[in-house]
Amino acid sequence: MTPPTQPDPIQPSAVSVRGLRKRYGALEVLKGIDFDARRGEVVSILGSSGSGKSTLLRCINMLEIPEAGTVTVDGTEIALVAQRGGGRRPADARAMDRMRARIGMVFQDFNLWSHKTVLGNVIEAPTHVQKRPRADCIAEARALLDKVGIADKADQYPARLSGGQQQRAAIARALAMNPTVMLFDEPTSALDPELVGEVLRVIRALAEEGRTMLIVTHEINFARDISDTVVFMNEGVIEESGPPEEVFAPGNNTRLARFIEG
Image (tube, rainbow, N blue to C red; front, side, top):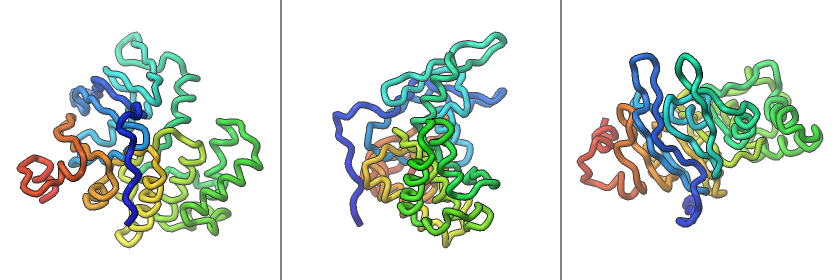
């Protein structure tokens, strides 16, 4: 097994979160999260259902707007301003769109457009958001589909693909924007067990390229093998964070150890 590329310890943060808070009504899901991911680092985020893992990713991508705190991506803070009546909104919608274009997001339920072919899904954002020449986008999309192992499915519609193939198409779609950071929200949780391995192999190959990736996952052994840093969340806070050889060390009597043991 090829070890993941190690991030340069002096590299600046690709993602920096400070004081992040998010609530839904009376339920506070994130309770003041401070978090950094360096460029080239693979961070796996573990925790039980309801611990705030997916909400953290969605706040980084501003699919959910936090009530407090800041998110900085590649050195640029995502500016939010207070709204009349409470809550916050992006200060500049166009700046928000430009920032989102630098963040690739892969969802657990694929989120492919069912009325477009696999190729159509992959070229949609580069042609319409980045305004790149269509021929260039098609050539790059075919290369990306080959990279994730489904080049022969380019002209198929998502409904004709297995779950694993759909998720690999979703990864290719995210990569087509050439993002600074890749976010994976439990990318294998909707897959049948026999299809999990094909998606994990693609993610492992991306890690070996030195890509910055944040991965919410329940695949403990995968997180142990691929990660530079493992983060364990519980009830809206980060309870433990560090290199996998430390957080998974035998004999640790921590909540993470008890979580792993089931």
